[in-house]
Figure 1 (spheres, rainbow, N blue to C red):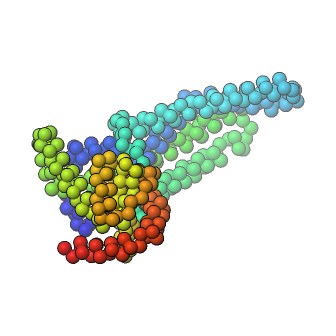
Figure 2 (cartoon, rainbow, N blue to C red; figure 1 turned 90 degrees about the vertical axis):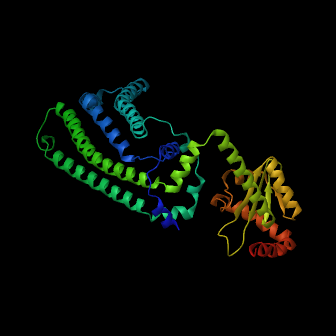
Figure 3 (tube, rainbow, N blue to C red; figure 1 turned 135 degrees about the vertical axis):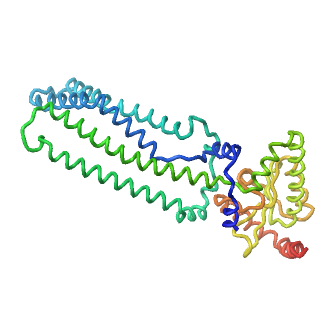
Length: 368
């Protein structure tokens, strides 16, 4: 069934579908782009400040190690050298931190068009499902990411090998040199590494982004029926659309109330929320939500439950969470398994006569 649905999605996503996906954070993006921006920011810092900072570090080192015999080992002396070291550390890390922060903001903005994605901040409980997580481990997307990670390792290895070859051939290792050469050596080495690493990662980022762009476009494709329905919804007047939504809501509520008599239990909050669930061993993989409602409709669910003898249990936290994250006609989220299992176990012990009748009630309904 899933393969058939995927094959039928032949139409490109409409602007509305793209906008909704963007609000949820579902757009083409590659984490490697952030790395490219960060490396470029680091390179600019090294080019502009590298030699000066390296010379300052060298001068401080010479000053410290060249005057060890005259250093005043006292509270004032330690305070002075600590201050000098902290000042130097600030000069070293300050530009890097600021540049990295600006680079991260720019990288995210370039990929999102500097637009906010508020729905992407919401917690997706479906991501906590271990079954879905296991499926993602063996997907084509996982293999593609693995290939990109391998390319990253190769790039780092090539750059480090080239850097080592350059370093060991520098005069600093086999001939006397001026102290000034140390600062230039450090800055030149950093620039060498940054430029080559930036080039390799930029290529990998381009590959990753192109792959994610194609994948996102394919994932957002729609069936012809979905496109037609969206056009109808857009052409429909607000009054007609509102009336249809109200009718659909009434039909859905009627259908949910019809399922309540076959529920194992109704969990309440006690007046604001009500959620009816069922679990048939050998049929359901996990407890399913048959109906849920708040306020007036929650009272209606409980009324139908009482008329049919369905057990009702008050659990404010579970009822509230089931109402928020449970979907009618679907299994409850994995994070709710433990709390719901405890409720069902208690119901099975205390309402044996009801569950004996429930089997016959379900069989009668299925035979219709």
